[in-house]
Image: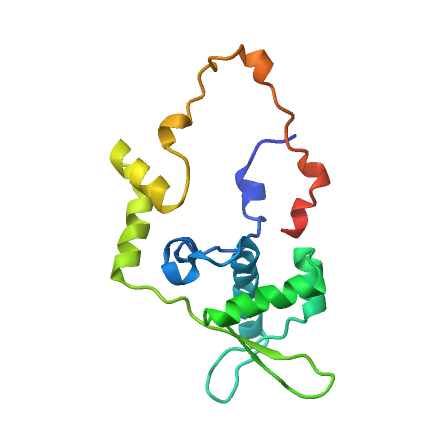
Length: 176
């Protein structure tokens, strides 16, 4: 397998997942699927701009059928409906009916944030001292960083702790 190289790094595409979705109390309770869906829909907005899908108010809309979303997320129709409902309930997604047998226009709303949340995000990205690491891990709901020790465990040798690696060839990572 080749090393990461500057030539192939430029070809990588990815979805941007906003940190506010994990810190702001309003969005914290969203399911992971809803957060990922927001990132996917947010990516679709840039395509809408290229296609000039802008309404008379200057708002950007896009069309993303439930079937397409099912395929991208590998989720059932009912799950997609629940995810969209989650996003609508927190004010991140708006669906406008366009007529019989026509897909809805989707409008993505901006994520609400404030200065306190922005400071929390800044604190979570700076790892100046151990106390801020512990605080950040608690904000994010993670374990104590002191437990992330890679030394030999007390109950065996490193060989006894060998775990099977993830087989990403079977995970269809190209679709994420």
